[in-house]
Image: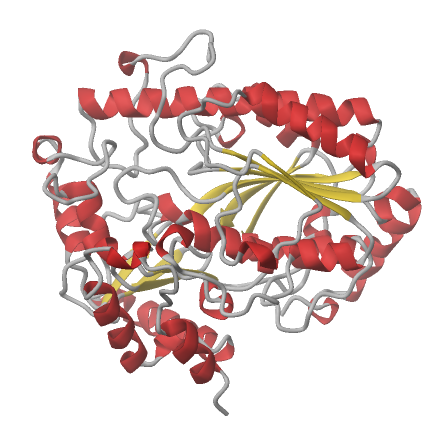
Length: 503
């Protein structure tokens, strides 16, 4: 799928010519991966009217902005495992939160860190990893390992740690991942004096895909945008440190959100509000600056892209595509037709299994246990839920919503077998077309595409018995007692690899 055979001869020739004209350093660049927590495309460069993100907007003008970039799973640990290993969640095993004992199937899974170290790169991480086991990612340098959700560690300290890393790398090529916490709950109006002029509730509206607009949710949205302004400041400090090294022109820089914002029908879901993220790539001498690409791309594309950049062949089992032809401004004859999304709810009290697949226009959501309670939806819509989040919609909030939004919330809480959305005419997924005879052919095509992808990537959740066993074990552990059991291990970590290994 991601191999050069998928590219047209002309696109390949043009790309090789562009690389041959670049410096040797650009052919084997440093790699800076900037990851923002819980950050959908609510940035100025993506057209958001409330975002105050001048540094990220400038970065987009210097590089390539991907309009349709997605994560395979819209919760932190699985999302990070996907871009670090280049594998879908069911392929690598991290199908829930690391803090709840979910983990990679194998601790020796090849990944960004291990593969680049083999190629002589000095590797570093600033911020949390949040993937199990941490030993699978043998960084040479790791600073600020905690989540820092209270923002007690200021943005300037992330930049200072980057300065230390750059000095430690010396003359070696390096890979550094910097993970910023700012857009994660709690949404702090101001931290460490930033932003200097915070937005207030009367200056913003909740994102349109949320569907509810009340003073309480406007306050949450305002502080989310204040978090993004603080994130943008942090990115500016980091880029200034990179500039001081003199290596900015020799660095492949990638900026992504790890999933969408934590509002209803966002984080944790397979709706667009959860899966769609910003992706900006700046690569001087290689990526044509100022581009906006419309192709479907995924964070699983980052590892094969990085490996190609450093002259290393990507492992054959990676499902992602190398982004080089898009970065170079080409229009490849072949590109992915479908993007894939998945969730298990991420921990027992939010358990619900869903898959999603979309093409350029239509989106299918598949719920293999239809008409059962979606516990993850309850974390946003049910104030009695043990994990109801402050940015969710209370009963009073929901009562103000239009009928079509209330109907969508009801469907989310107890999903049917399939949902189908026309994203061209209904980008926020309010109207389910799955039972519309006029869209029967589209539905059938997307179901087939999903099953084909599951078969090709050997998804254990293709088997209803595996779905049921996984869900029942999750529901049996809603007391979370396993968190205090040092040797606790989810049974799927043993059964799923065996299923995947069957002929």
